[in-house]
Image 1 (tube, rainbow, N blue to C red):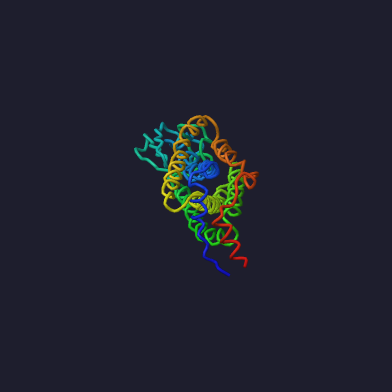
Image 2: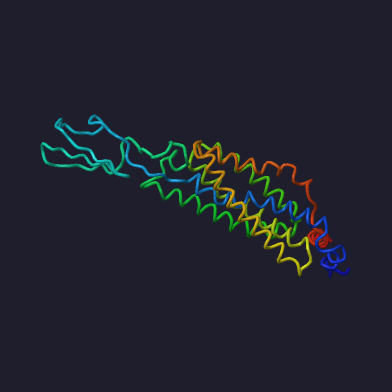
Length: 273
């Protein structure tokens, strides 16, 4: 059986920019927004405001000296100076936690105290996100060829919606970090198939326009994140995370909103044969 199918000839015969192509690409570009929003959300949900050690009282410090003392609060330590003995002692960790120049749940950093010695956990969570992207790129590229772009695109988007929703209610850092890994995988699978579906909707000579449109939609999502975060700044970071999840709620019906592209359909058909 002849397997050399030139789908571009079909697109040329049907007009490169017909109403079908415009509708398909417009919808796919709109779906690009959640991917960039979730990748960069850590800038706001992981925001670290200015902080210092919370105040302590003399009874919180193991000392038998009852003389006048001065206490200096730094970011990660407390220094107590005793005037009577002309000596001082530094407590390396903040015994009463931290005091932030913002409400305590403005970000997961402030909620879980990921500052000073714990600050590396913020970088770890984002590194896990990046690792997930790498795994997702490797995994979903082959799966989209085997099962079709549309199937993997919608599945990844639904997975992204579920993960973002669960993240908004996760009670611990460990669970949050694990979810970031899988979120990175879902974002990459969702994004790669979205881009591929866009460029496969038009013949080769017009694909650069589809690529530019995809980049524009991606950067638009980045720009949207700032005003959204500004509006939500007085609320817990969980509300911003919940809002990002709700932007993908339409993924539950997305399968019926657009069609598989002919190039992918033909490839899938030939794979089955």
